[in-house]
Length: 493
Ligand SMILES: Cc1ncc(COP(=O)(O)O)c(C=O)c1O
Image (cartoon, rainbow, N blue to C red; front, side):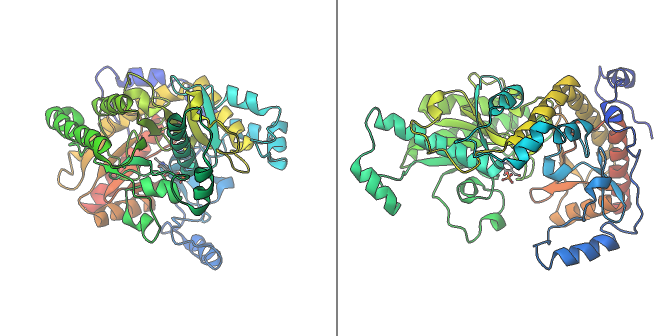
């Protein structure tokens, strides 16, 4: 199937020119050219059998299919029945370079990796002599504009929670000035009481998702089922704009909605009974349904928070590392001043938060601390990912492929005007989503697409999100588009 490029200026010829050096082919000469389906359905009989066995000891109820990772390659994931599916879900948005990437395998087989794995250090106490350099050449080389330091963590939730702690300790230290902790603080904190603990809060947004550990879960507002039965901090929630798509068609209405949300954000800061130490926001609310807002909104958040002394934490756990067509999605905004902290995980394999202000490191050691404080094996992978991404210009390629996919989806969806709506992610790389009228219709689409050889995930209540690797090329896009169209035709003949 041949599709025409959609964006004016990006003709089919110019696109092919840009894709002359096909990175995917370079990495994966043996990659299949389309889905291979051997069982009648996905999941197939072997998945069902193995999953049943797994379920005897491990909660397997979220299993899509049991995977054969050794047999997966590039953009295609293989299940244990031997089906090969084009994967645009990529381990919940966390595979940057494709399955069994040769550069990552080389890193995995290096002496540095063996050293990092078999001698896992407690990094804050016994950092390896190589760690500084690994960070400098990898995670720190990739730092967002204005960020010079990093604290490494273990997962996305952990990255956010350590950022919250940094914010809370920073704000307390400003109040405390040069004074030491008081005797009352030192004793009350052992009873989980003020003044040793804090009544400062972290603000998040309606439908935001920031993780599921105790602190991060309090800032997560996407789905009730994630939060039920878990004690939560009484922290404020600001409204996130509910925009109309396509954004370019509804600029005036959307601007009004964003102004409303900014006013409410400011009102909450002014009126919340205790101090707001920081707020956290995703560039696109991903788990919550791929909800976008404009640069105007994020600039407004930065300006208001800066003026009021509230720290800005940008959660790039899902949006970071190239998928948006910028290495960090918040680079789309051109903020007047950088955020105070930027958190990352997923595609980088390593997790943590970036910052610049040295005072975000608490005055005393052992306060921002745990046994591992990150993982040098993951930092080594992050370094290779960064180097490959920059070497092959994968962020720019993702931007172009995203434009191609977006344009073609737009034309496919004109054939299903009442069933599919709210295509989003224009000029935002491959970070693309669309929506059905109900959760059931969305779920039917996911299942039918999987049975045609496309592994794709949902988000929010009724949305479908695309989260492919950064080596998702034109030929993968064409397979993807064909399956989307065929699936819709099957569901809505
Ligand atoms: C934006 C965002 N923040 C935080 C998290 C939590 O990351 P983890 O599941 O690694 O704890 C996620 C996970 O989906 C996420 O999308």
